[in-house]
Length: 225
Image 1: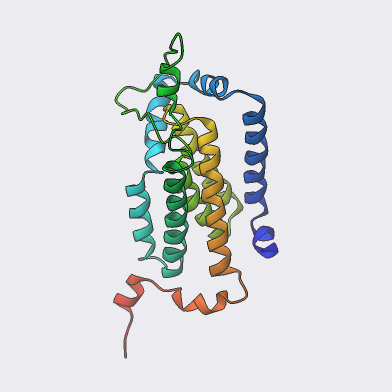
Image 2 (image 1 turned 90 degrees about the vertical axis):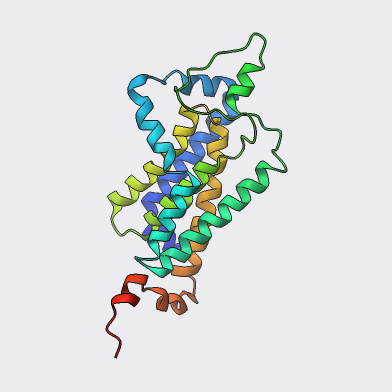
């Protein structure tokens, strides 16, 4: 695990900064005030950007990306599939058990006396329940963090981290989640991404997975003799 962290130090520093700063914000600022702060940035000029960003965490989009990985590298396909599948499973378990009564922003602010009207993006279907944790955020971090761990380029790692982060922030921007929801989702996504990646690439027995470094395309077009 030390080698994994060493090879991806910038990535873990960025995520550590997010966890620390996010934790401080959640502990010192009320859920209501924190959401209203983010909601104040909603403008027509940014709506399109965040609507498109949020699709990167959609289950169907992520599944399509995972399937594409099979044509590139089987090991990456398995790692990303496990990371996504496990993080999504935990998210759904938490949503429907411990946090099944957690309401989303529009429901929360609409129930206040007097109700507070949020700046909403036109055309977006709003959800009311199962707020914590954010599934889109967990999905985005499980995939983009895995790709960042795989990359050897520092700047690619940084870009992929911020793509995942902004997918999460898009959920707050669209008032589909509170900040604490994406905070929890990010931690879940990164946790499974790191554990699965370590097992397949850095664990003492990871060498046995080298044979998975092929792809559907290589199998199809290989010269069999």
